[in-house]
View 1 (spheres, one colour):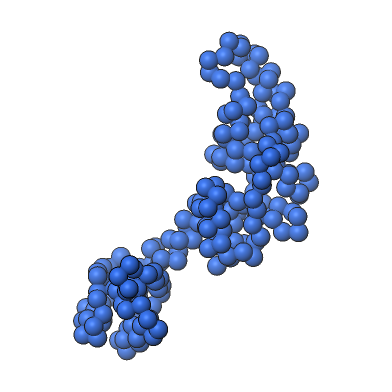
View 2 (spheres, one colour):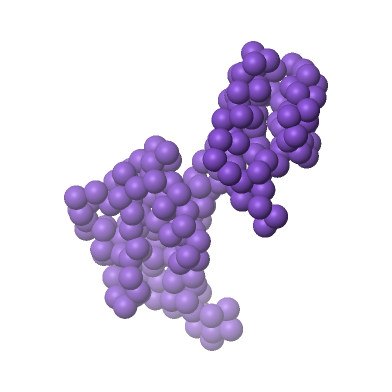
Length: 214
């Protein structure tokens, strides 16, 4: 799964010549927290809702509403761009896993997607969450089986072979490592009844943690 498959193409952008007032209005209207700043199609930075908050007069200001509006209408986006803040980007052919790791390590909730120096999209934490939901098959009907197997070669093949012998179709499968030397498997099957499959798995020595219809 690649970033280009999960990103939002043609993202909302703003020019460095736009005013702070325009940026605030755009964020409120579009309900977004970060706007890439572009000249033509070239990414030159980004501004966040925090940047706009810091650039706006405090609620404790003695300025009149007219003076506040004047300042917001006069200050340009380029005036608050943080030149010393790196603009992290990702290529559309990067994997979603790479993007999730980047966002987690940097504690950011959105990454501009850049190809040939041009902004082609943006991928956010919501896009990553949706990718996780699809990988886990949460929206897919069927049966969810969670089991622990020895963490050694051939175990996944043994489990899937047992399931195949019952004529069941695996729609999703995810694994992770446990501290006790076992591997957790979450398998979604497109079957109406999994009792015989669960029974067979247990008879082969696999620890079935749960089996629920979702």
